[in-house]
Image (tube, rainbow, N blue to C red):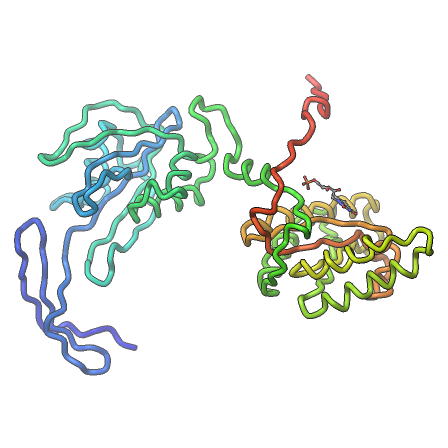
Amino acid sequence: MDKWKLRNITDVSPSPWFPIERHEVELSDGRLVDDYYITTLADVAMVLPITIEGKLVLVKQYKHGQRDFMLELPAGFVQEGKSITESALAELKEETGILTTADNLTPLGHIAHIPTKSTQVVHAFLATNLEFNTTQNLDDLEEIEVVEVLPSEALDLVLSGDIWGSDSAYFILRAAIIYPEYFGKSSDGVSQPLGPVSQWVKSRQSIFPNSFTGEKVSDEVILQILENANTAPSHRNTEPWRFKIITPSKLEDFSEFLQAQYKATTNEDTFVERKYKKLRKKVMASSHVIIISMQRDESESVPEWEELAATACAVQNIYLSLSTFGLGGYWSSPALVINHISKYIPLAKGERNLGLFYIGKVNPEGVPPIKNKGPLETKLTWIR
Ligand SMILES: Cc1cc2nc3c(=O)[nH]c(=O)nc-3n(C[C@H](O)[C@H](O)[C@H](O)COP(=O)(O)O)c2cc1C
């Protein structure tokens, strides 16, 4: 694959406001195309401004291309004779009345706009600790409403599609990933650490197989989830978590094992047909079932409880990773499994089973609302 060769350029701009070039190009296979049109509109300098109060400054403007109002980051064309940073500072001042200096601009990267038909690149910068210290100075056709939101709200506006200009949306998402500290602060400057992370942690819940659709996901998805589990902390970095994964083709086999164990460990008086059937139902509704265990290191260098705690941290990471894939699951630790799993798959010396983790595709309508935990105060003792 080669780049196209440019044979000739003709300026066919209908007006100085909209430069268009007609290109004669030779494609990599030798074909000639004599009417390939592109626009050479100037590059754009964009700013993601955050005020000293921790607010992100947006501008609301009518955009005739879309025949609608759009909420965007302040931006404008890179002006002739001015550098990209000088243009960014000028646009910020003109559109919002915020004056700052080049040393307060941190590059956020650049993005290609309609790369098939346009040469335009949008360059963006993060600017922080800003104040409305001067007056707006709008261009002839500009009418702008300055809108201040919390950075976390701006992120929500991107996710809801209310900020949908590709450049603004991209740079807000990019800034949120690179500089999460700005996106978790409240307006009064009091730290609400990791706003989106808190939401995510608080929305974690056990989802049981009766809310699973029965659909199966690829082993690759499970691997990604377990990669997250593998980042858990452990004392002396013993990394004691071990996972044996029942894949879709072995679910039937595993459910037969559980049912057989149930039969073998209950007598006629205690046998409950409903429980017996449920053992199979839960496994078959799942996509994968993970056998969780904890492996002590040979020298037992840390107490067992620490290894159990580390494994539980890994399981919490599994819990937290599920929703991204539309999955749910729960940790189940029946004696039937804890005491007898080695009949299904051998455990190594020093390996202790901690139950199963059922994972399945979730039917969102079947998920009960999140149960609030009991009050935190009852679990706290402040030492002041
Ligand atoms: C270590 C551990 C073991 C559990 N074992 C079982 C179990 O054997 N059977 C069961 O129905 N639920 C089991 N659960 C799930 C809990 O009973 C409970 O339903 C769950 O933690 C609900 O809270 P959540 O929605 O905040 O996750 C277990 C949970 C944990 C953390």
